[in-house]
Image (tube, rainbow over the protein chains, first blue to last red):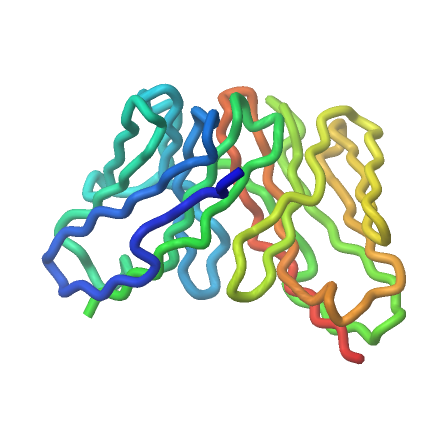
Length: 113
Length: 111
């Protein structure tokens, strides 16, 4: 079956702009989480969606938001981009609960200049 | 904020050496402990999902143990090979279904 697909793979944006990243989970998976990885940092949890509802939220400013559609595809949006938002953004999906393994996409590399 | 810590941060070993890493996590509100391997330019891939205190899991030369009462898990690699070079991540799942990752252990195996 197809894996987790993230688009775009690479993105360059200017400070102050906004960006939307997309994640298509594995078919049948209803839980989607987003993570940010910056140099020297581990995977920082952004938020998790399950059946179109945000179930968990990490410690990020309100400029970071997300949503999930009825087909479980998810988007995350970052408004008013800052240089520090440059990072690899990973999406992961899981079948029901995280008691089973998570499957990751290849990520979107965002560079803010 | 949940503290999930891994040690060491990085490790250089010779091919054939056996090695182990540690993951420590909160001992309360435990639901599961995940281990992932993350190779450069690839996505993290699951190694183990462990839920019960005393759990031991094995996949080839890699094995893991879990102690939920004291809040730690060990990952062992027997006879390391260059293809084992990767970052190994552990992640703590609480009862709220939030998966929190540690900083990872970067393993480099020299031929």
